[in-house]
Amino acid sequence: MTAYPADSLVTVRPFAQRPDGDMVVIGDLDRQVFLSIPAEGLDILQNLADGATVGETVRRYRDKYHETPDIDDFLDVLTEEGFVAPGSATASVTDSDAAPASNVRWSSHLEWLSYETCRRLVSMPVLVAAAVVVLGALVLVALDPGVLPSATVLVFRDNFAVSMTLTVIVMLAGIMVHEFAHVIAARAAGIPARIGIGHRLYIMVIETDMSGMWLASRRERHIAFLSGPIVDAVFASGIIAVLYAARHGALELSPFAAQLTAAFLWTYLSRLLWQCFFFLRTDFYYVFSTATGCRDLKADTENFLRNLRARVLRIGSRVDQSGIPRREMRAVRAYSGFFLLGNVITIAALLFVTLPILYGYGVEIGRFLTGRPSGFSSIDFIVLFVLAAIIDGGGLFLWLRSLYRGFRARRASAAQPAAATTAEPPVTSAAR
Image (tube, rainbow, N blue to C red; front, top):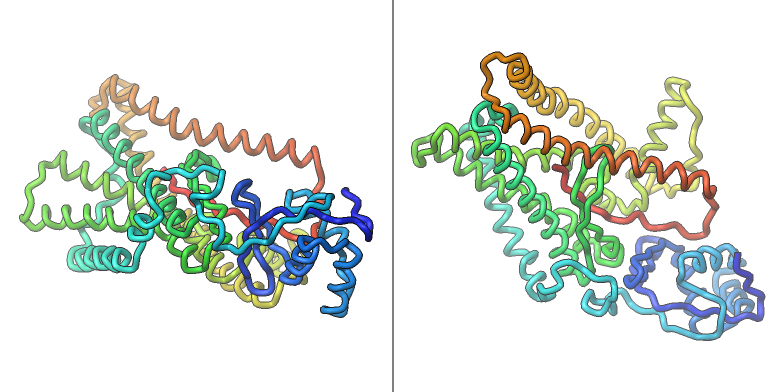
């Protein structure tokens, strides 16, 4: 804990800011650190940055708000996060528009794309055109529901090695385009973003770190979070048009090409389905979080449902949520329905997508191993094993590593109460 006597001066490092209801999000784009502080905290930071001592800052705050701030805890949190430090150097508080991506040291992917180009790519005409394409595909599905194949189309009983390899390539290419869309939308808002590899539970994902979006406007955040699903929906719509044309004689596809095209469609549909797992931090989750203004909607919803279970079923202990503003609690109650719906969708995806695919391949593998007639050859079996080891094994490794690191972190330090809260980092992901 850093001591700040009443007669001491404090260095306030430059930061960007964005009002968020009765709170203000402050951030250091250079270090990718963001905090949500009470709006009155800006007065404290501005006074300190202007050269006032800690004691004088407290007096000014008391004269304005008629209460004494707990400045010691407030400055301790800001010191820990690197926003202030003991000393007499001053630095001006910056505005959120004063930190364009081109001026920050934290590097971003796609920096070769200009700010103007990124703005055009997420402009309203482009979004409207995307909506028209998706609406057209929905009309085709309404006219012929059979154009949507079942998930078992991903079970390749002939030419498995070639078919699965091509499907995986298309899947990875689609994921990268999905994530690049997030990066482009972030750069259009003047925010740097980077793509990396992570996991959701035991599923390996490619994800985009857009932590700086906390400093963007609500509209820019919505566009950034929805850009990936919009791209997936547009590509899926194009494939639906191809399949519709083939089913109605306007385009000729061989059985092999038809199944492969349908499999490509499922790589996009599965990512859109993944976004509906509302109990995870998916793109759609961040849209809800931004729309409701909740700083940690997921954790608050989990605690609300835990309290509901404790009250109704008398199972477990209750979590105190009295400190959450009434407006946010209304949003939490509403989102709890989506949270539970996400669990239902997950179970349905397991029953009607994952298990039928696993069963189909299990049958083929069983036939192959027992010497019965099978569409699998030795090379097919090797390809299946290698892909499963890389994709599923990689996700399992990342998950177990995170559990181990979390266990070590919990043992190393206990949580401490803070006067400011760390803003939940927007990290969007596209599952395989």
